[in-house]
Image (cartoon, rainbow, N blue to C red):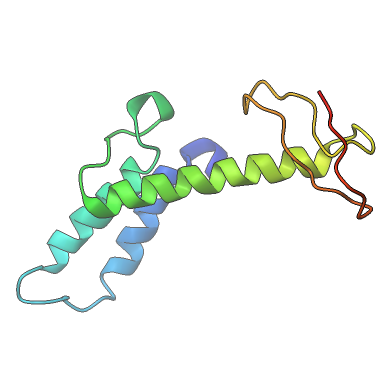
Length: 118
């Protein structure tokens, strides 16, 4: 219920606040407050754009990296789910999917040679 009401961005920031006090200062150059701010930014910007629900766009290398990793993970999960849930029968391909903009190759399940399919 908490996730539905607050969302994972705000829950992530709450978790950060709970854990950050247990971490010793990282170095003379970066104080705990600096790391807390950077980590908070990573959490709040990982959706990548305002249109996708981020209150901020990624503005640090770590935030940009996490955004792209999260996006890649979501896309691969979508493709694997489309292949797993496909009920197109023995075809090596899924039907065209509008959300992915393509058909996906499921592979050959019986070891046979590929058949040209339109």
